[in-house]
Image 1 (cartoon, rainbow over the protein chains, first blue to last red):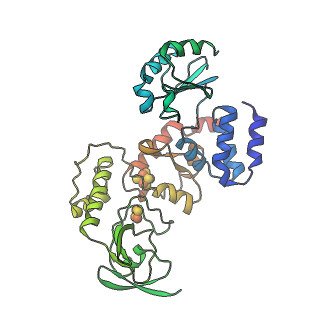
Image 2: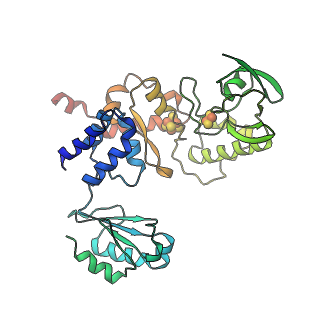
Image 3: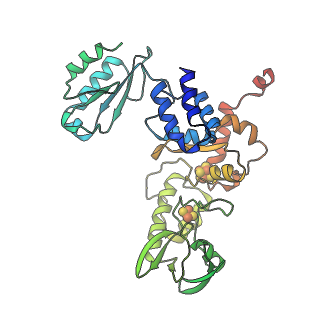
Length: 150
Length: 202
Ligand code: SF4
Ligand code: FES
């Protein structure tokens, strides 16, 4: 975790309680998860009680309170992707990585999440890996794609 | 502050501008059931048990009495068929979470709420937020807060703060309409309070 960068993000919003969500998002983006000490520091510097920081940090799915793997896989299981075979894609990914949605493997290589819509149903089934979208993907293709990430 | 009159259950009631319907009703001796309301705390509007029907310029709507400000010539009805139906439903939903909550029993009787209408999902917390808000607003300690969202939402003590502040306070305990709060405290104490031994060692 890069403390300098995190401090810089926090200092930018010093004393501004209204920037809480923004700060947490920037740190999440930078660090991929929100460690407890960081949340405490955010509360202190923005002058927001820790109870509220925790309420917000646990409220939104964007925020992670546990470390994430190096690569984040988001599989869309919304209705359009579902009818186009998202379940089989999800099963393949689960088999290959050994993790279920919400989990991270022990080598911290992958984290897996399901999402409900990525906003491009015509491309279903959609999988995003580290923000890069793979559309109309088949179980075989996703198995190939995963090999490129280490 | 200027006095206005409004009508509650057919009676002319005097109130001050800025008062809520609940306060005006109370002053006139008309009772409206509440669960998440507390005089020392900011209005919250969480439980909706205080729902009443108001009529304004010929239109009626359902509002939370603990939030809704009085207005001149407002017509309020605190017990209509619709109001009773809403309260009954709220009570039945709450009873699925805390079937034995003391405060719910008399209300359930009054509104004919069936405690077995919905499948039990005993979380015991009614999400009234009294404990959380009392700690934040009155004691200013913020030792307890809500976490997670939707059906997973629950109260949670902050161990670092609770282990220092709660021993001599516990003023939120009697506010809780169920025993969820005390249970959560005991659990936090047992699981995550720093043990006296580790504190001695520093
Ligand atoms: S623990 Fe009790 S006081 Fe606190 S929110 Fe739940 S029901 Fe209300
Ligand atoms: S008392 Fe009005 S919403 Fe709870």
